[in-house]
Length: 215
Image (cartoon, rainbow, N blue to C red; front, side, top):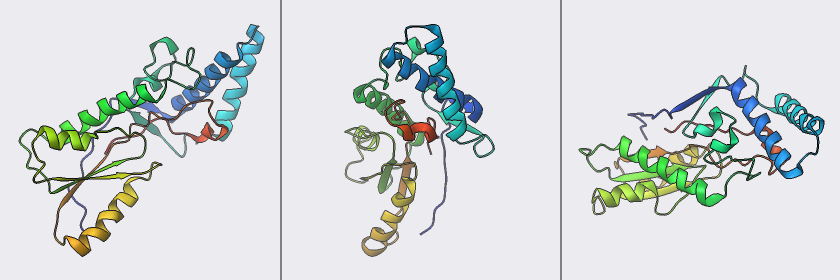
């Protein structure tokens, strides 16, 4: 199997890892403040200090990760009133799945439109990979329907829970196409804007990665 013609779309927003760690700390603190409603400023500051200490202790350091890209602007500021998803002053776990799915659908559809120009030839197979968002119909299905490619293009959904979704997505067609469809050419698209991580849901979120590229 030959992998070639790599393409990527860089998301709009770019943040250094140090800033991301501060954002995660602030997000966990705000979620806890919204839940606990501390009576005094001293109690509020104690929550902020505790969460910052934990995130900086257990979060991935800047010598391991330099920066992150994101399709979601929320990670670039801490004005909770302006958040698309993480309005933590009102929703301590972030907005519910419906709003997250709508945002994922917008980003996924935009990615497919940009990957496949109006003049593009229909691929034989599109493998849609995602580890962070799931909607029906998918961006790949919408594209095939909009371009009237239904008779020439097969859509395969290689959905996976986790950021390594592209790895089983590559192995899966390798096994099946070698047996049934030798010589077929596929198009693999990985959409991972990472909007699903909700602060203050479980303690394991200290290592979470709130931003990812789409490739």
